[in-house]
Image (cartoon, rainbow, N blue to C red):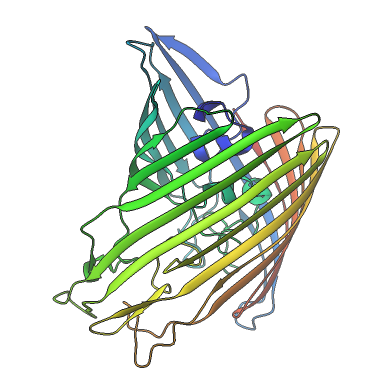
Amino acid sequence: MTQFKKSKLAAAVLAASVAAPASAATWQAGDWEVSYTGTINLFYNQLDQDDINAGNSAHLQEGLLPAFHTMKVVSPSANGLTGTAQISFAPDSSSSKVSGQNKGGAAIDMREVFFNVDGSFGTISVGRTLSLFSRGAILNDMTLFGVGAIIGTDGAGTTLGRIGHGYTYAEFNTRFAWKSPDMNGFTLEAGIFDPIEGSQGNTANFETDTPQFQVAANYSTSFDGGSVSVWADGIYQEMTGRGDATGFATTGEVTTTGVSLGMNISAGAFGLVASMYDGEALGSVRQVDTNSYQCTATSCTEADADGYYIQGTYTFNGKTKVGLSYGETNQDDVNVAGAVNNTGTLAILRSNELTTLGVYHDVNSWLKVVAEYNDQKSQFGNISNISLGGFIFW
């Protein structure tokens, strides 16, 4: 099974042509095949937050996924090689807000710009698309087609789904990667990735003289009435503080490591997903962020991070999926005396929990309606959210 012929769920993020219907627009340009797919979604969110500084609110907002518009081309085969190229941009359907989200809404995000070359050796992939680390966790999360967790009650931009509440965001990152041919259901992938030097505007404080490395192993098989898939993926990166940088400077080193494991079992109408990760200097949301390490002028200490989620679903008549999931993310305080992170503030313990009850109904091949109840807990307070909305796919 190639990258472009995965299930609706995998296509949603990995190929960014989210749940593209079989009738997606396809035409010939000489010997090349060209296709255009996409999706738009919007949700009504009724939020109740127990923080006295926030309170209740009602917002119209897109879910974890923004809108996707994807153009893909497939070459004719020549000398045993087939090429594909893809560009996906992701505009917001929600209105711009001043604060409360990772982006302000009413914006365009270039998610994917990459090409693949397929041959007997497997697939060489070049450019920017979804990373390998945490990919299995996000692709199998039912809130991918929902809302999940949010950041505060000022709705704008995308929500979090279960990002930061069971796994770290996989990131859309630039890389050179290789994927093995399918070996009786087993595939192996490895790549060098553009490293993340610091985070959130603090890249001047750190430098990297080697790329970031990521790997992924996947196995899937089917049995009478069901299927099983398992995955394992990992990340490794080193960065060194620049003692001559402006602002807070360190000569310490930060090493980011992480391993994610998971499985998806389906038997008839029942489905079960379990996923976990563990690592050091991993952000609770992003792969590397300012809360994942602390530095003094001469050394840095990495925070331990871990998380998991478990999800059970039942699908009625092949069209209506009902699911219940719970997950949490934990990041330990590194407790270095007198230490500051690269923004000059003390690192803190982060612990996020999310319980989701969701109903995801396929009206037809191009329309999905969704209802979710999400209850999220953290040291900053509790937020409950009732969400109603849906997707159109083409």
